[in-house]
Image 1 (cartoon, rainbow, N blue to C red):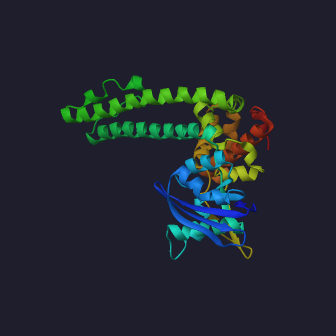
Image 2: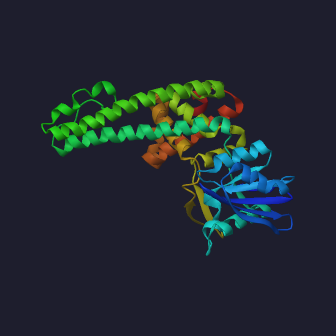
Length: 347
């Protein structure tokens, strides 16, 4: 966990919502010099803070509307910090909680050096990262449609298609197996939506591939040197990391990617692990998928996995390899080198 420890003349805590924002400004001595509820209007926000803008930092909790505020502060030359929502227990665990109290607590955390930091993703790449995440959502929706078609076959005690329906070429005639016209229509609707999603996803992938050639083509092709890693996994890893230099140690990166478990100890005794939901779920998915694809490509890696499985079990063996791949990616991007299988397999 990292905290913001910068020293300023004024500290502004913002309890941000979609249509309103409660603003609290503290001075260096901790006195409240402004405490007001505002509309989420950029001009109004800047006018309100203008008397304190000579040496001011703005902090807000990480929630879905922080983009515009971060960009506004950046354009105005005001330092902006983002609070990690899962670490701000001083707000969420309070007995009394409202916007006025929350904004004051955010300002106090800023002033006291206990404001837990989240990464303020730059706007130059941010929209492309969000589009990539949206693509994953659409892929899952397509999977739900295909699963519903297969479940309909089982519902009517029919043999499921022997081919994979996620491929468009295999869907022809999938509705004809049913005699009831309503069931045929039900399946036809799923097929039509899946066909449309195929087209949308294909267009999205082309757009994303063009964008990465503008943002960072070198690291994109560097990630694609990993056996089995295609353009989507490479895009996911690249855009979820953004800048590898924001992780000073490989251990920090492994923790962020949810590749390690964090132990809880007290008085020398271990009481389990925690923080399972803290970190980047998209990176953890990408490294897990990449390991499965690598196993298809490399026989030596299969032998390594079999040895790990005999010792640790199937699930943990894959987790160990995913952790190893995450560390490898960290040093690949740090040292600007392509993937080398012999070094990956070396103990």
